[in-house]
Image (cartoon, rainbow, N blue to C red):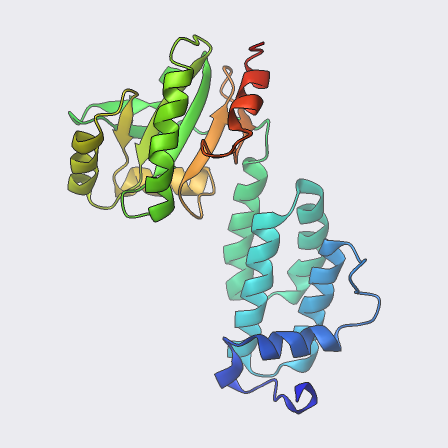
Length: 250
């Protein structure tokens, strides 16, 4: 059946069959023991060699690029992107170059961008005003089921560390609907600072911190550099152990 697959049949673009076929066409050296960056490059080379349909090429290329940018380590990303650029169509190249640049900026140890957001009264705040302590930053929305599942756990962790002067916890909503956020805050009455990012501020936060999905937790060091750009979620059993270690809590 795989041998009969037409690689230029656009009806297959959302099915695994065509992806399996492409992988089967890849060179033998790009096997399961091959470094992930080399495997991804071989995948792109195979797509370019065997697919003539531009729409299908873009779908598969977009998929492998997205996975590599989001899941690669810094070393893997550098190796992959250097080799992949000549294989990527211009329209995707520009978009993913921006994603690669943002991902590199978000590697741990990099200075966190100075974000702005407002409180319930509409007063503008700057993230830099919270520097001086570790900051546990929660990015969330009311419409995200995963965000809402994490909120009670976040509240528990805030209570656990409420007397820890080396840590500040703040939450920023990325909701499009400010009223939905206000209603949720009124319902929860949370014990830690709550803020809202309007569309412009949301865009800056999403681009500056490379936010692809919510909830997202970021741990920032007292000097404003990022300690962990993808901190464990508060519901994770290892969350407190990791944070205790960072804060040197016995």
